[in-house]
Length: 393
Image (tube, rainbow, N blue to C red; front, side, top):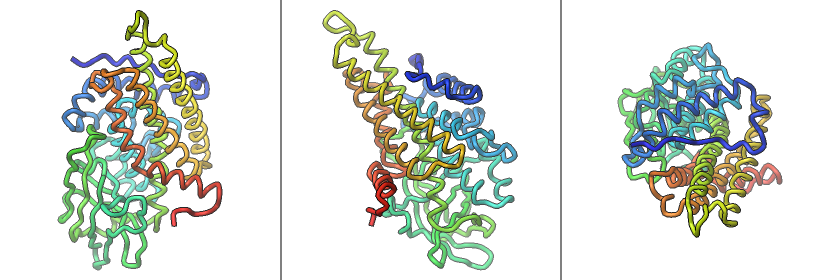
């Protein structure tokens, strides 16, 4: 029988006062759905390494697919803080769940909206918003992760279509995606985006098995073997790395909020457990070292909440820089991972079981700290921003 989800969100600095009524409604709607539909099944899904397909309709119903996409294209037309709060609540449920929604919103719908033409927007965005179509994002390759500019995936002009060849790896949603936004090089060596649809001959999506992390998320490869892509499927609005990197900025922004959700879940569970677990005649919450752990957790969560709220304000004003987003992603994911580890210690041996969410969050966050810009790469982005010197090369 599923354990009750008694999660209570920490708000030590009364940050709710900074949110609008719409923000709180969006957040609470997502939280209610996660408690009802995700928490009862997520542990079993992770144990079985399966993505519960019924989540797709639920995510669409609560507006988690492209929440900031205008309503005329099927989105909810919400602001960036609303998007962040949705990601926070989804990752509180599970990082794999947030990944599914984050990819659909920031890596599929965002580039089609930002770089697609009107015909592409009307064809794809409404069906992506309802979950009728699911998408994935093809950038990372087997030999090119942090250095996407060296990608080998390429396409050639064959007159009435493009001929696409190459492979992408570690792609969330790939096994069940209906479309893929794929980044490859044209014959001049310029990076462009193409919309590849399932069913195109030569396009396959083998699933990645054996993961210890993000087990409730479907991960796979994208393989292109002389795939004929219609010319109308190329995204006309951008060339170069600016295209995929701007998508990653949107996704990284969502991750910076999402990681707070994972941290809050670990903290909430540890706080509750520490009050219930009796040792030496009193709750372990009464011991100094336990209080040290809990006090440091809530301090770091509060700092991360303030970081994301301010970043959300800047994002709404179109003033958030890629380097600012990198700082928040790096800080908040590392913060969440450290809190998961400390929370595991408070739970003792129970922390490694599926009765509590700690070990699942910890394993998930080991992926989140690496994907969409590794922990070290984001550090160098900040370093380059403050010094003006590129340390990548």
